[in-house]
Image (cartoon, rainbow over the protein chains, first blue to last red):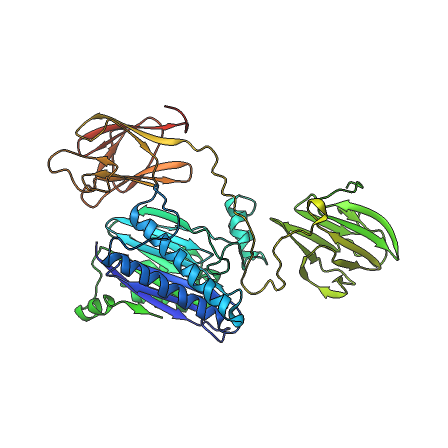
Length: 271
Length: 237
């Protein structure tokens, strides 16, 4: 399945630093968004470490099938999903270790939402409240459930989504990458099809843009980069309260793009 | 409103130096004010009708001022919303409330602590209980067609039906596609999904393109292979 992506990361209108990081590697089929937290520049450090560590591990494993894995292997998931989990655990270790060595970074952490596409299967691993949406046909669906206090309350039906949006506790996470020596990573596996569009995003997007508006943006644009640009513009139009990062992946269907654009999109990029 | 001294989280109401009462906090939202319908009624002019509330979020307690006239204070600092820690002193009007949250043996609770609710933070020391209650398990029974086994228990998140190595339900016929279909698990239920190679499958003799939910007893046909899908109790043979 051909994968074409577009990505944009923006500091927003109210913050002075962008603590989000992303990586997109179409050759590997790997897409990651991380939203860092911590004093001074610790947030940037944490999200940067996470994205690097995850990409490195998946790349090394693609080159060497026997590359060691960390964490407990879960036989209810496919090998590539376990591999993605291993990458996230490694990222957790990298951040936690760095925080131990430098007092300025104590307690730093990051969210992570990562997708690895192999054949017709999408493997996902996430920690925190950055999300992955799947747009197919006339529906948009979140493939992740937030690891936040209000997210857990919604999951257990103690709160509705609307109440969660208005809750003063909505920024309180129940899991973060790098904050503790170990972390519980939530995994998923979903079959994907030609024509599917994936949107990975930090909560800066979902703060200001509702899923139905995201859906409109996706259907209105011709290519993933235009979708990503439009989504960030919408988040800023809604106030730009937080950093917003969006990675849009289009599966299979040929989109209207010139040859050069297609080549540009095949190069792995970083922020 | 009980007046029994217990080990659970509670507030001790004081006026000057006298202890008036002790109240256990058992509700997720515990209201304090002058009106009689509050969980803790403080009948004094300096207290607003609905003055404040204590909200429980998992094992953490937050005190929230409800727009009171004279304000709500924690350890002599005025607050709108603040986490309450064991032995914090709350001042409402002229009354003081001591918040106690001990666990057994008089040890202080090890609930996470944080002060500013506006920036993102992570609760630490939290154990996550994903209640994996006894969920039913999907089982597939082959009726006709060439597969490596006659029965399959669907223990995995995604069960691939096809000829490729990763397939659980291996199609052994000639020209069997690498991936013919996939059966996935979403929460309590299962669904079946078509693949790029096989655009149409049949569920209960009706054509399905894309995805369809699977119910106990459904008849599934994929590339000439017929099978029944069942939902069984986890320890049923």
